[in-house]
Length: 320
Image (tube, rainbow, N blue to C red):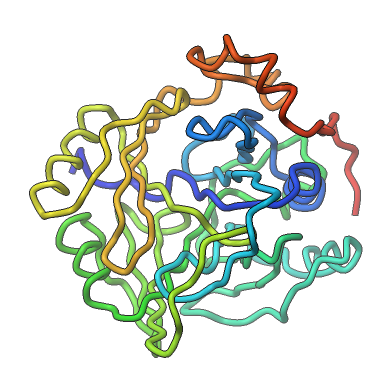
């Protein structure tokens, strides 16, 4: 249907050091830094966006950089893993790359009909590379340091760890239009739209876990895609009618957002696909300097003086 949730728009996590974060996600993972800005609700903190060439919805992972925030604690009521889609047959390359860059990783494992390689970013955020049996046709960032035949195509899925299945599953299936597609032990897979990479959420039921704590090295929220402002308002109305506390629409300049907590405690966002990251700089210039929304531009000098200096990536040379 036209107003169906189309998949994952982006995932936002918390980092402790901006330059270390930029180095890992661009130089090691080969993503493009598509936007350097600030947290619009806390302009003292950087907000960094990574993705494909244009930062298309479904490829975006973002970070609030809060150096003084304590480390998070993974647990119930959290997004506990963020998965990227890579081509089948690329795991040998990625394991060698992780060894070369001293990235902590685990041996590949099978999940449903896919192969999964788990690894961790410098703040301890759990990440995964997933090779699905069906090819992911999205184009990778062509000028990144990772050869195209192995490069990340975009987001594959997120894992929600919950104390119980039914409250979250009920929201996903009865209100948001997801469908249960597979189950294995305590893990349940839901998908929206045509399914496949970028439209998947796994719910892992861990009744024994304490509630997680959001902090450095954990996910702050996951955003779901909607096509237009009108469909977003429709989602807001449906959520309010179902008893959820939903924020007013917030202008994030590159998209518009509403936020609410799902029953297990994970912060959900529904974000519009347009207008995209070229609204305030050209495609060629994405990620090359600090961009501020019009309402913060008069404070640029003050904001820049309070932010730590950044080392932005130059056109990368292809490495191991």
